[in-house]
Image (cartoon, rainbow over all chains, first blue to last red; front, side):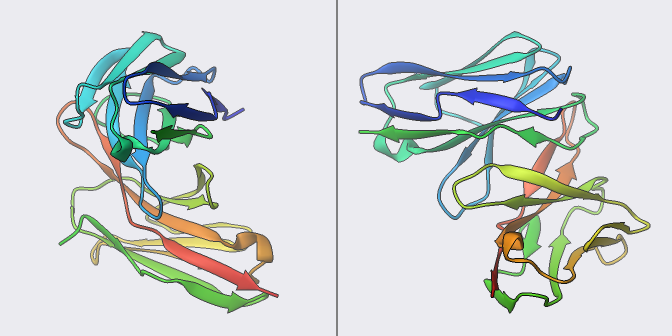
Length: 115
Length: 112
């Protein structure tokens, strides 16, 4: 079973709101990722957690705050977002972390609209 | 030069056609290569990994040429359901944590 789940599927939030995106996998994968994807563009890496530690932060603004409570869960906390942050937010997982990169499996994404 | 470059497309082909996608990558140290497909407003799904010896999965054949830093995907007997964007993806090994580099994708539209 190569399933990554994400909630919510859709989210509309105002610029002063605080919300969280959730991601879960039960494949025993040890690397988890957050990506942002705008229409007609490829996914853009935001964060990587490897063995539950943040290992890559691609210069993402502090209004995005990731959290990895355990090896199966990944959250993305959102605060004071801008309309240009509207996008599809994808979570992915991979069997192992570290320098060797394995295939990644993506969740269905959360479609975020900031008003 | 972009790290991963693909044919921009779109490719519009009739059912039953054979279609080939090409991709080049700039980092000669890249070790792993993948093709993903992404349907409109959906997540990318792993189509196949690409191995040096080439590999086939049903109607899909992937080839890798390390000397030319070139990857290809061939789809035979196209089906309507093959309509999607195909993403060429290369693994980047950097420091203590690697990650994937995505091409911009090539859109395929298979018509009846």
